[in-house]
Image (cartoon, rainbow, N blue to C red; front, side):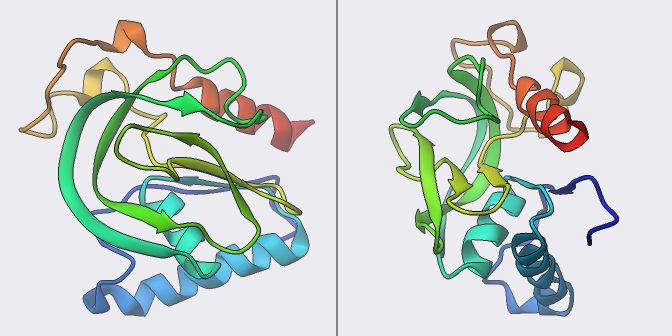
Amino acid sequence: MEQYDGVVLSGSTASVYDDDHADWIEPAAEIVHRCRDQKVPLLGICFGHQLIHDALGGVVKEDRRRATFIEIEHIEDDLVLDGLDPIVPVLHADLVIEPGDELVTTARTAYNDHFCSRHNDAPIWTVQFHPEFTEQIKDEPSDWSDCDHSFDDSNATRVLENFAYYCLA
């Protein structure tokens, strides 16, 4: 893993507790442990967020599907969330309900207390939302709802910029 500047574990239609996908989820969880042990920067997005927590002993549960914008509340200073506006795009049906070992919650929402996190000792960050989503993606999920917000209200891609900057510094 040390040959990599950083690793991103992105979204999936799978769930970490889904036995049908165990053939690839277990090796993906091993990547989490290797990144942690070797101090390789790791960013978990949506499913990646859930996988990292699960791999480190947290608990993920099924929730209702959301495909919209939500407001997050920053509760800890965090390098990856630096400069992030509170409106972010989400598309998920599972939530972290108990954080993994050594993971500190950095942001929450009205419906989830562990929406973003960072590791205490390794360069690992997680976000439940989708920083890679832009205006072009909104028509892909058929149930997408803008609610009171639009992509003009969100600078979620800032997370990717912050992570890349850290990896290349």
